[in-house]
Image (tube, rainbow, N blue to C red):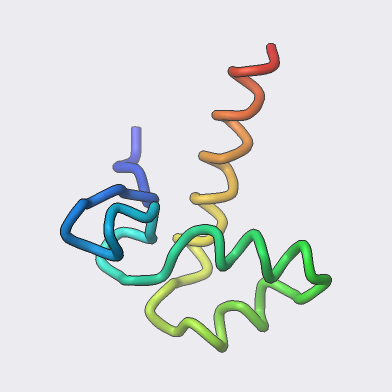
Length: 70
């Protein structure tokens, strides 16, 4: 299994869940998508996050949600 792409580190952004190796909060991705923006637009604004990281993060979030409601 792949290493989680979203990490919580008290030393980075006060423990806000961020993309591994960056200071980009996962919530930024969710906010962009909720606002009707594309994944491509998010990636242009946050170049330290790769497409693969963003897709993996969304898959992890989906799996977490489905395990909670299932």
